[in-house]
Length: 425
Image (cartoon, rainbow, N blue to C red; front, side, top):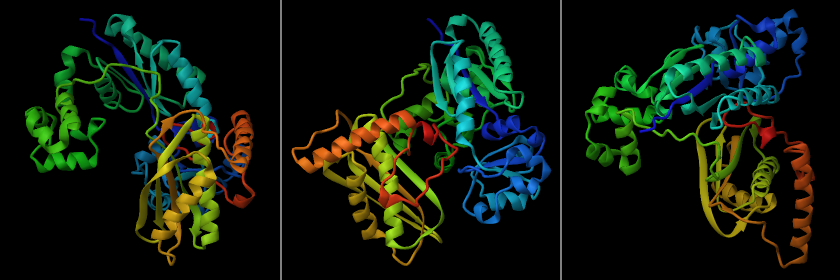
């Protein structure tokens, strides 16, 4: 039987370490990267005043921490914590506005390094990936490759950029291994050690067991990996349905996917959401920003040759609560204006006009990959030709190159989290 050898690599405090690499003044200090946006702050002269490097109080109210440096984590600053809460916890915390262009440059360098050592590289997020190192024949050879990768990251990405590496027989074990020692760890789990290694981990360590699933497991008396392993497949399927029940049963035994596939699957939906720096109160303001979001979604659909028939709208209020609704349409959509008209009809029917909107989200699903449909009507044909020309401009110069006159004054700053960066999609 031909056993796979899978490596998982995960950057430590990715965005924060990239900022510390870019500016030596930040090294050794507690810093955090805020959710999105570019700074007008002069980074080159930031050492003259820490205050100049921090976001204003008003900006802080609307941001969350996407990454904290290891120095900030030691004080208790965590990802997804609000910036104001983080500053209360750590007054000396330096909060840096995210710079997606900078991070994508390092991500590209990181992936190029990995592809030198394996033909099978699967990007898992902006700062982590899997490699198939089965060609190394044994775990000693794979460990040597891991050390070479570390040295190349240090040389080509910078000394402040470190990564934790795990090596195992499948992606489940490799990822668990990479997360077992941080920062800058290297953990090797050959097949003979899988069982004991698994029993040393917590349920929440397993990728796929989040807080909700863990709570449900606890409710049926499962609180450790050993108790999960002792649970019958029938009981897990009864509680979690067939697919997820099988996943939990296999995970408890160290069985997982060992196929490293660098071909991305087609998306189930294409969407865009945005938290605004001020509450959207008036209908005119909501419409402008909604149209801008819809154009972003439509551009990505046309670029990848998708049309969609299912539209979902979500809004979060400034104070408390949120609203959302989905609708199915008989006519497929791919033009931002068509998506907007349907989206506004939905959101206007469910929103509370007395509550300001803090976040808007638009998502199109029911996607079908096809060449863009041609209309029989002259007006719509002209619009289609115009969109084709504008899409060519965006393909060459990047997303957001053009904007409708109706959306002037709206700004969607880039986010610094997740799979990809806005300027790349």
